[in-house]
Length: 395
Ligand SMILES: Cc1cc2nc3c(=O)[nH]c(=O)nc-3n(C[C@H](O)[C@H](O)[C@H](O)COP(=O)(O)OP(=O)(O)OC[C@H]3O[C@@H](n4cnc5c(N)ncnc54)[C@H](O)[C@@H]3O)c2cc1C
Image (cartoon, rainbow, N blue to C red; front, side, top):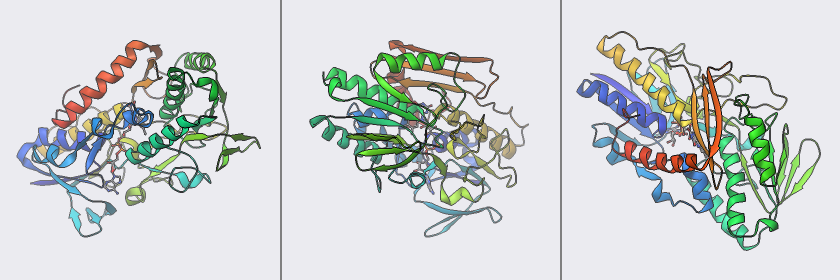
């Protein structure tokens, strides 16, 4: 019986594990190892930071979800991979695999900008459950005594969406509370222009986003790197200083230390069209852990986002390839990366579409409307229901 180990219990890891079980049934022994014991619907973390969701609304425990489907769950951290010996090394033991699927997401590189991040620094972040909970506390304190807000994305960021969402959501919430006049908002980003999103923009996304920020009276500073964050002040590389009461910044990402040695200098792992490691052919990598070269050289470094939608498709591509190889079937068609994303804008939302991911594109769009807000809420409920029931074969 083939032994398959999946690392990570989020969008990629769970989808891969469920799909492998569905395709291979009792012919494979599947184990999922994750250092978190629950699934977190990450796209709703900005809502949690605003107090619009609670942790229990957007999380689900992994163990019952997986064991119901006959998948072994180990709550633990991979410390390393011995790729030549096909072993995952944890703090206590070694797990042998015939196939390994890596979906360990990012290491958030707060250390790259002095003062960045909520642990040792002076800024909030909304990229993990505990960070979003801390950001919610900071938001509640801020509301008691509002002042200037600075938000955005530092140099090297690839996941820009949450910073946009936070800017629009804080604006919407402050207007609802009739205190927007007490809180000027500045959006600082490493993107060459607003609406670039690390993918060179989507049709007229630059114009739409410029209008949106102007309409909401949010000042935008693009093409900018941050020198450091000291308490109450952001110091930009161009010498300007921006005082504030609240700061929330997206960090750059790297691969997590346990798997970084399998990847490029930033620890992201290069794969072929079927998500297979170029050297270690029994290792597959999906989601944020995958290496994707930036599409263009920007003055301030930016990266290409790897969305949940892409991650789920990568997971299915990896599962189909492994299942085909084990059952001796022909290899499936390769996956061409594309983007479909709903971005919250507080009182409205937008739909982002890019196919393929990198230009020139057959299809691309950015459309704003309240219908996309309803779509985002419905998608959250649907995805949580689907993943809790292991129904990853549904669209
Ligand atoms: C705030 C925010 C909002 C977003 N909104 C959207 C959206 O609206 N739409 C969209 O499509 N995408 C969105 N994304 C992107 C989406 O969340 C990611 O693409 C997706 O989570 C990637 O899944 P993943 O499985 O690759 O990694 P992750 O979701 O990062 O999961 C990695 C998992 O691996 C585990 N892990 C890490 N290291 C180890 C280790 N050493 N040992 C064991 N386990 C380990 C972690 O605990 C975690 O469970 C958003 C991202 C953020 C941060």
